[in-house]
Image (cartoon, rainbow over all chains, first blue to last red):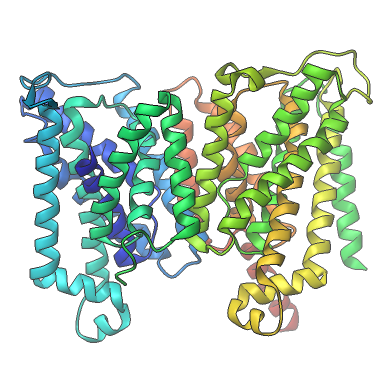
Length: 274
Length: 323
């Protein structure tokens, strides 16, 4: 699970890292990604994992519009306005999907759903393994994009100093659009790859929101490498706490870790890269 | 002088209004909740507005207040009036517990930490079944109506109690804003480093506001429990319908001003009720969807709250008067 947590959270950290905005609606894009993938499976017969790029594309498009039309207007507003704009988005997306898709739970059936590989004493379920592999590939692709492409460099420049970036001829408004669209796209991608073992319904984002924030805060808001470390750490924390505590308390443990990390090391375990 | 007349006039209207509404009707309920949420938003405003710390976890204190007084009635038959102060005390303790580690955080970080704290309380209330009744919730027991037992046949007294609560917290808010503490908070808000240099103990001042806000919020939780009669962990510890909503009311109205939360509540609560009323027969989620759209629209239109509408109107009038 850790690898998947990393991918859905990288999107959140990317948005914060480049724009300084915490997107409270991020988990809703996970839900959008899951729905896109579900419909692709139900009507086109696509495997949910193969539909992941489609989920990415749809969320990318929505993110592009949301950034250009809504968030761009509050970038210079006080942080409360930013917080509540994304909270408003959360309400709109969640209830919009409730209207469109209804409240029933949907899941997919795949040929590999109940398969597992045995590695000595360890059993690894195949859908988890596929999700992990896809997440890894996606994370590497992002890393490569940010490191080597002109866009990646321009985006990092914008994150460090928007004014200087603009003076260098970088269209910062465009960079913000790309960053936001890319961020929510990645989260939607993560949503698609977990579909084989998570059922989708309009409130599914709520189940992941804490988790995403814990991952990001553990790794340090804005740090992509941190999100990967944080994702793995949360995966381990969850696995361990399930050994010692009843299922209802699992989230509680995450919350407490979350507050503790915020209080002690707000810059994250990995340390601030910026 | 003119100000005082205006304030008294508003209070007089507010005092008469409940009498005009049907005592068993729907609108008196809306009014009671509007007043209650205005008071809650005002309490939030003490920390969110004056100390500039956007808390998204005030449901934690609210729920503590609701549970404390109700559990005291259920288990020991103690009047909610006393339970209210017990809840206030526990709310203050909780505020201290969360504020000590998080007060140095700012902006988004503080919002996230407090959001998580509210959720911690919700999970605990759901799990600690022997004390809280768990997810099933608690019912305030029925006792013969009397002021001492805080039990009434009608909503009218509840509306007045909510109004009095609103006046009290607004006075407290103004008193803090104008006190030396208010000036210290403003200095911290403008420039934390400079405030520290001139000898303000920034952590201590922020802690004080957090505790005051926590105590008052818990006491309002008791008022809510008495009006609602039934509640469960997911309602009183709700991030969306308590924590975020009270912050939203204050923000839409105008953060850091005494009138802001009142304007915000007068707008949001009736609009929400209207939405629920109009669209409850329609598809699920429609009323919430429209609420979200209105929220986004208002934030884009007035990022600093409704109060700015009045300010610009005032400016227009005074410039006309001059010319």
